[in-house]
Image 1 (cartoon, rainbow, N blue to C red):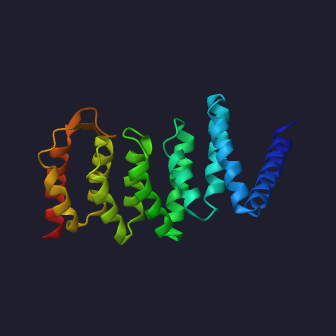
Image 2: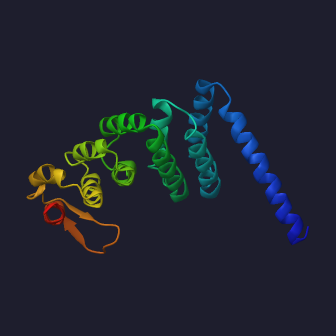
Image 3: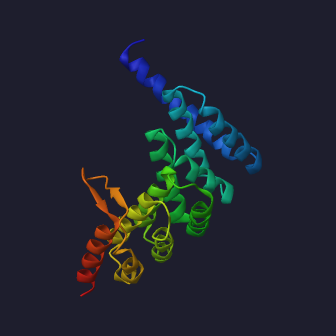
Length: 209
């Protein structure tokens, strides 16, 4: 098979993938969700490339399914050990939030109660909320600031700075003395949450002047 033939085969495969995607989304939602949930569980026993491939497709399908169970499963995927699956689920969650913010907001609230400390999704969700930028996002990020997971708190502080909303300052004030240490994505050294919160307050205070 030459290059042109391979490209044509790729186009054919992509067309077939899109057709199957539409057909799956036309299935009964409860049946599709159950199938996607089982596929997610089954992926844990597969090698990394295959698991990432399947979970990435699961995330894309979940974006087209309405309801709390789909959002919860997307949030679970946000904590996947596979970077490709995390990226796909994050993009899907963001897209759903722009269309149906309340569904995602309620899912985020549930995640704060159901996910254990250390779950990777807790440190990823604040950045998604910061990107969405809905008025309710500041309130949701305020809940992250009270979480026991230090990484989640740090992510929420950074997201609030990105949102550049001075109304978040009162929520940040109680963290000034927090000695828990976190490592930022773009930094090699650790920083205390207190230092991070203090810097955030100063930035937001200046932006509000």
